[in-house]
Image (cartoon, rainbow, N blue to C red; front, side, top):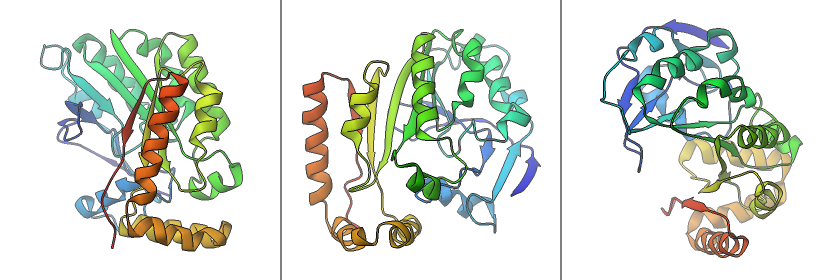
Length: 270
């Protein structure tokens, strides 16, 4: 793992994501090394030669770039962790995310965090100081052997579910981000049934088979589920699988009376 300390020019940047005004990413790269990760596109802009998951740049001055006062971010949606995991293992050492949170409290944004890590529990004391705060924990598959292959350094599914339960107990709004849904592997119905007692909202995102991620997933399937390789080729070829899946999600969530949002990519892949 190549770890570098770098100085950023800015840390709160305008967002192109729907419903989000600004994003904060304390790190470049992510040690979780998830095979399906869309954020590997960042390498086009950073010049890294290392494989995705083999480097992390630490924006060592990030907390200093948060203003000490002002109304610019008051009531604005700020998302922490759009192209990195702000609670990846190196956060234990650098505490950049914690120091950023400390600076954000007085600016009164509507805070949203996306992570795979239960390290977010460390900062419950700070999260409770925000007027509006939600934590989305992402989870794709529950089979631990498959998960370890796909997400080598990420927390187990069990730890993530326990983190959601703890956050809810502490009064933090909880979101289970079922992402990415992997055809024939992600049992999203079971996840909803297991967690609806302590999850406020569910987000669903399908696997986006862009070239690099598709190659990684195909290799993963050949190692672990070769019988699915041909089925995935069918999924890649058109939207019929995802159209049905989206309809099933909406029907199921309405029946279970849970709040949900669907973020599906409906684009054919050559």
